Amino acid sequence: DRQPIIAIDGPAGAGKSTVARQVAAKLGLVYLDTGAMYRAITWLVLQKGIALDDECAIAELANHCVIQLSPGKDLQTPVQVWINDTDVTQAIRTHEVTSKVSAIAAQSAVRQALLKLQQNWGKKGGLVAEGRDIGTQVFPDAEVKIFLTASVSERARRRQQDFQKQGQPEVSIEQLEKDIAERDRKDSTRKVSPLQKAADAVEIRTDGMSVSEVTEQIVDFYTNLR
Ligand code: C5P
Image (cartoon, rainbow, N blue to C red; front, side):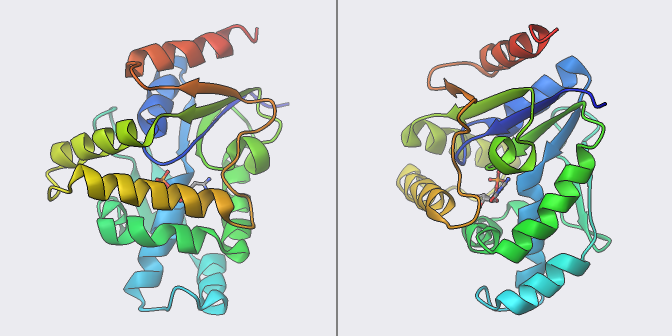
């Protein structure tokens, strides 16, 4: 017997992280950022100088690394991420990691290693998990499944605001739109667990919606389960 699970999937920059954390805080659930796990492995691959197409070496790394996540103390603090005892909380958010992560996440050995880790987190339920394949692969029996989307231009605009807030170097909207469209393409056309709306997921298109409006909708779905 486990507590309910909320699965939130969608493309890059749709607002999943912000919304998922708010929903978790409101409902007193655990928040699981699966993208952070793919980013942490990507960081380690780059740090070790392993070629992105060396699937053997990367599989070895994925099967033997220890990834730890710990929620930030409040909604403004980023989720703390460690890989093999190195704090990579900031390092996994760089442009370098963001531009390489899809190539690593497309490798089936990496996905298998992380799938186990993620399902372990969900054993007792009571969590909000966010990613690309949560409703389809990680927790196909999740009680609430949300597919969050927004137009590419809206997502690029939000990314730019995030970067500004984090004090990261300015990137043009055109560049961000290109990067987002490219990551969408890679994530949704890969062979293993592509980004896909689960048949039983509810799609929420967040253009013009505030974070609290989206959060309320999802909280309502959850509350109406009982
Ligand atoms: O959500 P975030 O942007 O941090 O995810 C980074 C990347 O990790 C995605 O672009 C995708 O390639 C990969 N990912 C994935 N499956 C998940 C979560 C993230 O393939 N469940």
